[in-house]
Amino acid sequence: MIRLLLAEDQAMIREALATLLGLEPDLEVVAEAGRGDEVLPALEAAQQAGTPVDVALLDIEMPGLDGICAAEQAHARYPGLRIVILTTFGRPGFLRRAMEAGASAFLVKDAPAAELADAIRRVMADERVIDPDLAAAALADGNNPLTSRERDVLAASAGGATNAEIAARLFLSEGTVRNYLSACIQKTGTRNRAEALTLARAKGWL
Image (tube, rainbow, N blue to C red; front, side):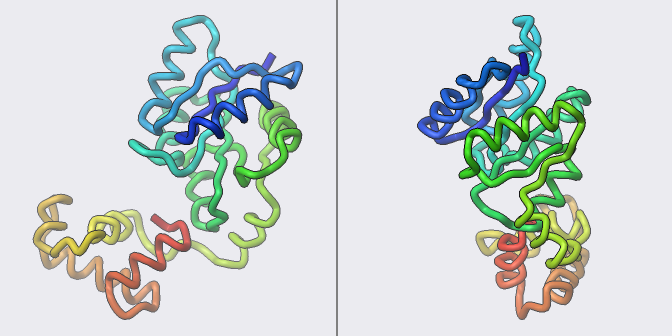
């Protein structure tokens, strides 16, 4: 029996997935989470209950913590855990970040239940399973041009934050913030930080 954790913030979708996967003779949902920051506690609770999770299915867009960050935490705590990322948004940058976070599979959320069940079995056999359309888009789109620190600064600029506010939040000087934002604008080929932020989000780079 393959034991699953299902993390999805929309209760109806989570319940429907749990029901469909529960119909498979070799799959059992033993833990659920409605927020990204509930994933690690749910894994720990399942471990303590004597039903450790084999595969975690994580929605990429969740409150509290997104699925990729939750995957990173879960992979660090439980290196043997297989992680399947489910997404509504086929953004190439998400795929790269998910793989870097330790995910074994990356699939669109509206995939048939039988396809998802097959992917779960394949990752248990140490295979990687990636939606072919997303894989092709990722190859065509090229690598994320932004460094980790540039991504942090650009993300912190959301909502019209000033350089001083960003600097205080990230413990940087204002001059360093300006340099990072300038690099982001140049690398994305945009005219200002707002356009750079919009493009980076659309590509899944943040």
